[in-house]
Each structure stands twice: as structure tokens, then as C-alpha cells.
Length: 491
Ligand code: SF4
Image (cartoon, rainbow, N blue to C red; front, side):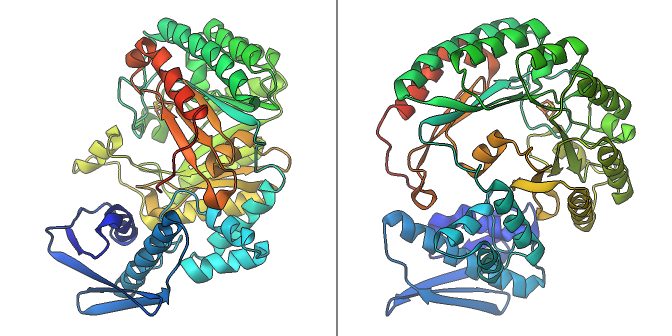
């Protein structure tokens, strides 16, 4: 266990994130622990100084004090105290994490901040390496993403994006972090559909009152195609009648074993232009190991079926560093994906959440799964980037998660003109999202000037039965956020 003695205990959780960049999923405490990191902060002559020490080494970072709003000062303090700790950890361990001192979900934001300050894209790329020690290849990746997002990043103030969650799956993947009550097995489909239809109807009135029109619609889960075709159609028809202005509709047909000609035909007839058919891997042994009830062959069949029915915008999700997989296994998956040539490919790095079955399995000695080394995960991610970019796909959005293999990133790649608006708006937080269904979290932007961005959230309850019983209350939560004056953001 690591003990932090700090003059900035308000940033305890952020400092813990920095420590985890170097020590992995370790326990951190303010009161106990055998390894001690000590921090002192002083302010003099308009300068802030953060001094960290541990194991006989020290790092000192002094910068001009920042003035501005309370929020701006807090952000600047947080950045400096984290950076000073990062400097010490780098010196102590000799490691350089790929994303440098950044621990947040959205590293692109820092690039955009620098560009809003007047830097060119190239200057901003150099800036994130210089200030945050981001590896040059990752900084260049951010630059590529900004290039792809040009002209399609922001929704208009009178628009919103829509998310509809269908929390049902045929079987549970071992890395899934939803609880049984959050991912149903199908028994509650009928009442869930009714609740969702009611939420759509109530939100139609709410959006009319708010003066907003739909930009992009997205149906995810769970696995939307796990429910009967007639139910899926009722939901889609109701949503499209309530919000008829979408420029784009995506439906995740994630598990290939839930896809058939009837469902695909129905989606096509409802102008769903973009679907996701997710192999995760093309190695059957791995698919069995992670509890997905399909084979690589099933994915190929589903993909060919979608092509034969005219779908010309298909995404495929892959996961690098799945348990037991080696670089050669991942290379095989990439071979197959490249030969299929979907319009977009999303490459995830496995994140093992504590609530997943996989976390338990890996904690049990001798389970035989073997976890890929951090270097192996990094090699897979680098291989995907090189091969996809050589093949004409371009990175268009990126996000990071906690507990990711090798401290890496998730990247969406797309062929030119095939970037998904919903993914960009949601990940970059440049579009308000109205989110319906169990566990869905609406996010409302009150000031689309990104530096002073205020985002208010309205979460729906995660448990399916709770959601069914409390759907009116879920809409009331949204109404309170969307139609009210925004509160002063604190973080
Ligand atoms: S498909 Fe997604 S939601 Fe369903 S069990 Fe697998 S990880 Fe969980």
C-alpha cells in the first residue's frame, strides 16, 4: 500500500490515478502504507511551488500562479500537483507512460484547448508532448483525430444526440462489468419495451419544449438485436416518429449470433445507415474463453448478410489483450478485418473492471488464462494503428479508461466520410445527449465554449426493474436538468 502525505488532499483521487500509471492497480491511503510519498505546497511572489519526495528523491515544480475563476484556479492547481508527482515517479521508476502525466478520459481536449489559445494543430501537438510528456506518436494521433473531426465535431446549440439503451444480452462476456440486474436475459423485454416507449413519448414533449431537434441517433446496450425484431421495430419507429430529423442512425448489432435477415431488413427499411457487427476477436478459443456464444464464422456470416442487404457503413469492434491472446492471435484478427474492409473499426484495449467475472478469474491462481504483458498490449495497439492507417482508415475519436491494459487507449478508425457523428459528440462532449433506457446517462451542455464547458448529467437507474417502475421519475430528472438554469460547475 502507498501512503500519500499531501498538502492537497482534495486531489487524492487524481493523485492516485497518477500513481497507478506507474504501479498499476495498487491501494493508496492518506493514513497508512509502507511506501510514502510526501508533498509540500508553497506560494510566494506570485509563484506556486510543489515539492514531492520519496525514497530519498525529490521533484520540485515551480510555475506562475494562475488567476481566474475558482474553477480555473482549481484546474491549474490540480494539473501542477499531478505533474510534480509524475516527474518524481518518472525519475524513480525510469518509466515513461504513453500518455505521459495525463490520466483523464479525453486527451484530445488538451489539444483543442491549445488550439483555442491560438496554436496551429502542429504547435498544439508539440505542446502536449512538451507540457504533459505525452509520447510523440500519441500526440501525433491526437493531431490526426483533430484533422478528421474538422467541421463535424460540434453539434449546433438547437440540436441534441439521442442514445437508446437495450440492456439485454444472450450470454454474459467475462469482461462485462454490468451486474445481472443491469444486463437482463430477456425475461423483462416486454415491460422494458413499454417503459422505453413511454420515455420516448415523454421526451418528445420535453425536446419540443426545449426547442431542440435530433442530430444523430444511436441504439446500444447490451445488444439491441438480442430482443425480438418486432420489439426493436416498435422502439425504432417510435423514436424516429418522435425525433424525425436525424442525419444519422446507428444500431449496435454487436453479437453476430443475434443478427438475422429479418432484423437487418427491418433496420434498413427504417433508414438505419450504420450498424456495428463486433467480432472482438476472430479466434474461437478466445471467444469461448470470454463467454461469447458465437464463433468467428458467425461474424463472417453476419457481416456478409449485412453486405448482401445493402449496408454500406459497418463498424467492427476489436479488443486487444484479451485473456490468453498473443500478438500473433491479434494479428490474425486484424488480417480478417482488413480483408473484410468494414467502413470503420474500433480498437479497444481490454479494461478489466473490478466488477467483472474476468477480474475474479484472473485473481484466482492457476486459472490458466494468462494475461498479456503490457508490452504485448502496446504492440497490438501499435500494430492496429499502423495497419489500419496503411489501409486507408483514419483515427477519428479516442478515449481512455481506468484499468486498461498497458495504460493505452481506445480508438475509433473510419474511412474518410464515414466517421460517426454520435461517437464524436459523445466522446468529445460536443453534443448534448438525451439518453433513454436503464442505466443511460443524459449529458447536457450549457456552454459549448469548451474551456468554460458546463455539463449537467441526469442518470437513469441501472437496474432494469427499477427503471420500468420509475420511468416517469427518470424523465422528471431530465426535465429538471434540461429546462433549468445551469448550476455553477465545480469540476
Ligand atoms: S455484449 Fe457487452 S453488455 Fe453484453 S455481456 Fe458482453 S460486454 Fe456485457
